[in-house]
Picture 1 (tube, helix red, strand yellow):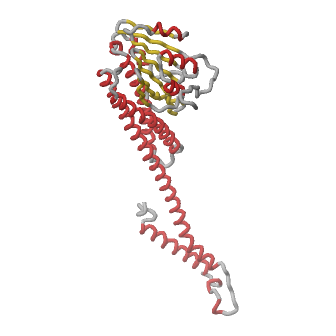
Picture 2 (cartoon, rainbow, N blue to C red):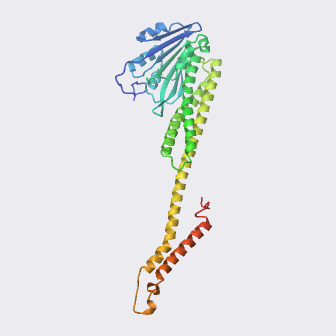
Length: 355
């Protein structure tokens, strides 16, 4: 594909058009609008004393995204990344603005799904593009903006950018808490003799943790790069808050890695239990087979029923009235001797030395 060429990577499903929301606020005023005609945007964004947050809740409409990019003088390569919704988290610096990609996390059908959030910081404006999945994690940011005495109302667009990043990062914590509680439950039953579906459940949790790790790890590098960049759009106060975002990402990475190790340990424990039960069954079967081997030999020996005319080759027990009890006695003696020997060696009846 030619660099800078934009096309939607998601098939059209005939849904309604994109939702475009504009929130403009200052310490003393706030305005929320749903935009139907984007040609109104230049006049609505003309107040430099207000912070403007334009959120486009769909990237399927290529012409719409391109038109917004033209209004804000956004680079075609950045617009291309907006449409290609499988980008890793990153921060790119352009002339006069910043382009940030972060992935928001949610739980659907017990599986973690991530959604790309593309953010542009330019002057007193923040422009965000979402894929269009119902709902997002930015509700707390909107609620803080609506409160007249909220600190976010006193800061500029860079603080709004931080707030959006912080909300996106915080969306991972409830998911990790759910997986942690589930692992605690599985750990209590992991040593049970038979737990159906435990291995599959551990594999599902580990797969979801890996999905989260793939999103969180580049996010840490992106925020690190944002802190190292001495950009005029980011003020000193906002940098202090971005450090908190970095701490949260490191915490997420540590917790996710810990939970992955717990999953691996529980899987190994379950495999060890299965192997131990298999060994116990094989040991019992081996002991039974070992006991019956000499008994089978005695029974097969006297089952040959050989009789000859030469007396020295006769089997005297065949004509002896006590021959049958004698054979049974030999079998019983062998059986008891082997049982006592196995018990003394610790193979049965007490803790085995092999366990």
